[in-house]
Image (cartoon, rainbow, N blue to C red; front, side, top):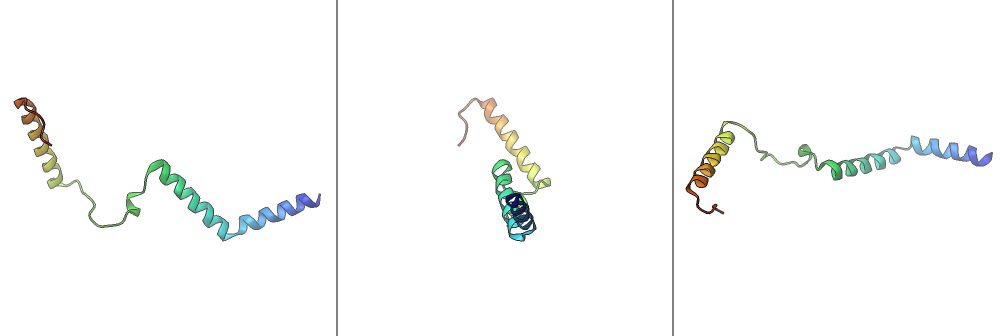
Length: 78
């Protein structure tokens, strides 16, 4: 009987503790990062590639260059 009362009291103290909640939050964040990778907004920095007109133009030029190389039949450039 007293053991059950002590367990209930200890559990309520633990769940009311901000330290316990910070530890659980930290653990959850690490598990989430392991499963899904790091969140881009947390990586910091300002040099994030944006898909704008210049980015898609570069991709298109690269695509055309690759097609030309394939039609020539030579070894791929490295």
